[in-house]
Length: 380
Image (cartoon, rainbow, N blue to C red; front, side, top):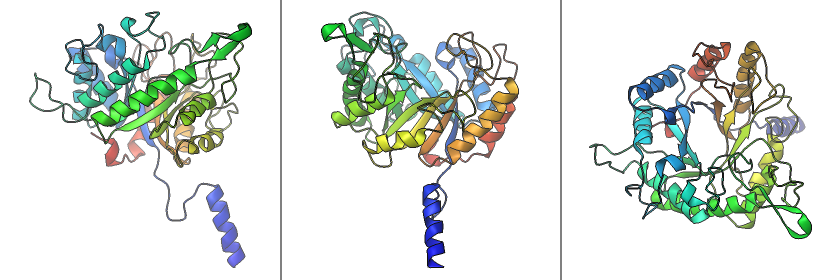
C-alpha cells in the first residue's frame, strides 16, 4: 500500500497536481487594441462593448510616442507638462467603473528618444525606464489629476515594453560586428531597459508587479544569443532570459506571447503551449516558481500580413476553449489574454469581424469568461 501511495504521489507531482489542493485557474482576459485610438463618447461605447464580453481583466497598450510627443523636463513625474495622459486616464477610469482589472504594457519610441527617430527604435534605457516610472506613479492609486477629485485607479501589473525580440517593436535586433558577422544586441539592450524600469516602477509603487519578457513567439538566434545570420532576424526567448540573468535583474513575472500553428495542445515549436515545460526551467533560473503571463494568444480566421496561417471560424471557437482549458491545467500560467476583440486588415484573430458582427468565438469566450473565477487581487 505504501508503494502504491508513493507511486500515486509521484504521478500527481508530474502532472502538476498539488496534493494540498488544485492550483488556481488561469485568469481569463481579453484585449481590445482600439481603445487608445478613441476618445469621448466613442471610447465609452467601446468600453461597454468590451465589458459585454464578460471579461474581468484586459490589457492596454500605452503608446509612449503619443503620451510624450516632446521630451519631458522631469520624465518620472507624470504631471510634467510634456505628458498628455488624457486618453489613458479616461480608459483607466472607465475600466475601473466596469470592474475590469488591467495589465499595462508600453512601447513606441518617441522621435526624441532614439538616434534614428523611428517608433520601433531601441530606446535609451534611462529615458524608457523613467517613463515606466511615470506610468507606475500616475496609476498607483494615489495620483490626483487636477481636473478630478478622486485619485486615478491603481494598475499594479506593468509590462516592460512589447515583443522586444521582434523587429517590428525593437530594432536593431542584430548589428554587424567583427569580420562582417552579425551579432545580437536586442537582448542586452532590453535587459538594460528592464534594469532601469523595474527600479523606477518599484520606486513609484512598491506594490507594483514588474512583468518582463513580453516576448513574441519567435526567435532564431541560439539561447545565449551568440549568432545571427542577418541584421533583422528575431532574437530568441532564451537569449533575453540569459541577459536578464547575467545582469541579476529581478522581475516578478514573465510575459510570453503564444500563437500556435495547429491545435494548442499539439503545436510543436518553441515557445508554444506544448513547450512551456521547456520555458519554465529557464525562468526558474531568474526566480524559482516565476509565474507566466500569456498576454497574447489566439487564432486568425483569414490571411493577413502578419499571419499566413489561419483557421475556420468554428475551429477558432473550438481552439479558444482548448486554449483556456490548457491554461487552467498549467499551474505556472497566471493569466491568459485573448488577442483581439475585433478584426482589422492586419489582424484577423478577433471575436468580432471588422464590421462588428460576431464570430462563433464571441459566444465561446463569453461562456469561458463567465465560468472563470477572478481573484480579487486582479480586480480594480
